[in-house]
Amino acid sequence: MSSEQEQVAYLDFLDEDNLPCRVEITQSSFSIGRAYENELRIEDSRISRRHAEIVKVWGGKYVFRDKESKCGSFINGLRVQEHMLNTGDEIVLGGLNATKLTFGYTQQRTQGLPIVEAQATDSHAPVNIDPELRGATVITDQQTRFLNTALMQKPEYVTSTTLQRLASLYEITHKLLPAQSVNELAETWLSELFKALPIDQGAILLHHPGTNQLEVALAYSREKKEINRSIVSNTIVEHTFKEKVAILTHDATSDERFATNVSVILENIRSVLAAPISSKLRVWGVIYLDSRTKAALFNSEDLEFLMATAREAGLVIENLKLIEELRATQEQLIKTERLATIGKLTSAISHEIRNRLALLTGIEFIEMKYSDDPEVKQFTNMVLEGQRRALALVEEIRAFARNRTDQYEKTRKPIVPAIKKTLSIIRLDTGVSKRTINFTYDVEPELVFNEEKLEQVIINLIRNAVEATQEYTGEININLSIVAKDVVIKVSDNGEGISPEIMVAIWEPFFTTKGEEGTGIGLEICRRIIEAHNGHISCNSQLGVGTCFIINLPLENV
Image (tube, rainbow, N blue to C red):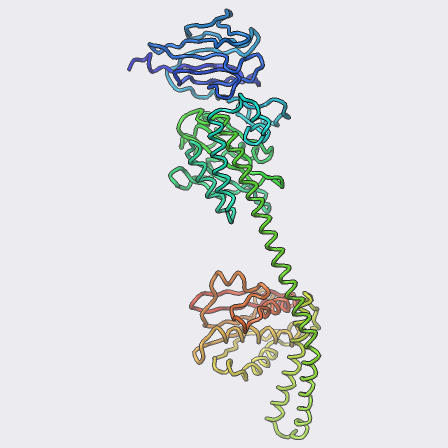
């Protein structure tokens, strides 16, 4: 192959910001004009829709031909219809003061001069351009034919490629709508973009309100390999997000915006597309695509198409977020309704329970009659204690139904005797008596607490441990210690453990794994009691090993 055949023709010109740009002529027929289907589109009313063409002829030479334009074509100051081009020829279209192009040849693919694609800029507000992004193509949602129907009414804006893009946009939208989560949407969307656009790598970044940062939700290459976050240009992504514009830049390897980005150079990234993922509510994030194939691989219609798919994705994300809020509201309403139902039932039966429990007061006469019998005294005290606890439990459920955390009356006293007393009561339970219960402590602190309520928490946790362990082999350990400024009480067992899926829900009201036998409010009541003591309760568990509930109570409870 001769050196003449290896040459690449090009046109140099200044863009609207007087920045140098270059477009390479790789086609055998290269059209220039105002219409979108031209290889080089120039937005100037003096230029015709198909103003001229540059045709490759025998010997690797190029001929310029005017296509009967309205205002004519000039080469080196003379009006022409056809002209054999030579290096340095100056081409002016639409009049002597109109756009000037300089023709030339180069032995290598051009580096460093951005190719500026045309934009639909008529009758739209100016875009706020970051100085670092000058030379890139930047459009708003009103500058894409796929979102601004007014542009579709202009014949010059509708080509066969545009119609193909519309069909692709419909297909992508159809596949995004059924998404049940943002992750599912991201996976589907990025996969479809790899089919529709000549991209090598893609990343979807979503805004995190907590950190106010754009975080990568999904990023991989055409080969489905994970890609490094460092290849993403922060300048482009942040400008896209902040200004709600789509950006196209060419030849990133020689672009100053990527000068300090080693990954870009190593991976030979050439073209970049970025668009905001937005809806009516907000901008949710940014879609970022790149190519390593050749400079100027993407064009303005690719940018418009990406902008349109990003809007569809943003609307789906908005719907998913609204559905999440609706579900949360619905769950809250269901909980509120359940609480109201429990409140009504508790109020309705509390009177009857009190009447029945009042009968147990007669046990005091038995105690008086057999006052010399220590066993009778022990059992009568237990019955009276049970009566008191039953009445307190009714009040606790009523407080729970009213969604109220009571401030219990508390006194400073030793906590070890209170726990021992609780264990002496619970050991009489049939299920508990078939398990081994151990209570260990290395300190005997005093703190401010409500003995009845703390007793209620420990009994609840022990009963849960009983249900998680096997008869005669089950072991329940209660340990008391001081850590920093807290009294720490651990209630652990050697039961079956709790799976991670269930662990995330154990503190939710009405969640239960006990079927019809459970109410799902026991742990919630325990949590409220501990928090009313300015404490904290948590849980650790491992399947097949056991579960441990940890109660932290402050030594100085003000």
